Amino acid sequence: MRLYRLGKFPYIQDTTGQGGLYYSGRWHEKGVQILYTSEHLSLAKLEVLANSPSLPRNYFALTLEIPDDTPFQKVAVDELPANWQEMPYPLELAQLARTWLEEGKFWILRVPSAHAPTEWNYLLNPLHPDHRQLRVVSVEPHPFDARLKSEPGGN
Image (cartoon, rainbow, N blue to C red; front, side, top):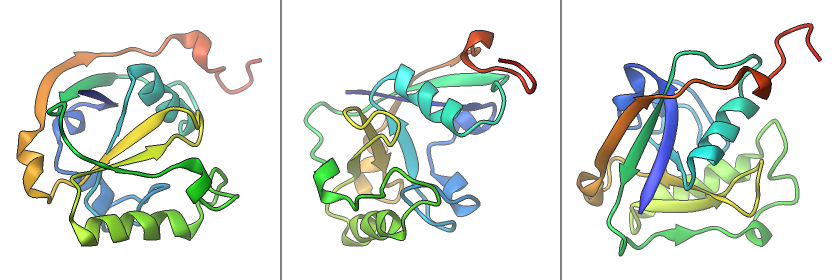
C-alpha cells in the first residue's frame, strides 16, 4: 500500500516521527513520536492547505510503501466525539491515539480526515518493530498551484 506526506526538505525525508516531539496535532500531543500520512497525495495536500495561512512553498512529496497485508487499527467516524473535526482539537483524539501507541498491538492507526471524513489518514508508530518495513519510494518536488489559496488581500 502506498502512503503520502508533504513537507519541506530536509524534514520530509525523516520517517522517525520526530516532529511530534516539538508540535502537537489533532491526534497527538507535543512530545509524542508519530508519523502522519495520507492514503492519497491529494488528501495530503488538503491537510497541508488546511493548516497553512498562505500558499505553501518549497514542498516535497514523499511516497511511502508498506506491505499490503499490514494489519492496522481502524477508527470510524461514529466512534469519535461529535466535535472531533473542530479546533481546538478535542483531547479525546490524542487520548485515543496515546492508547493505541501504548498498547503497541498495531503499527498503524487509520483515522478519518477532518477535512474529508470519507478518506483516511494513516498514523504510523515509528517506535513499533514493524516500522522497519516502511519503504521510501520517492521524494520529489511538489509545488502548490497558486489557485489553491488566495494570498493575503486576495479573493
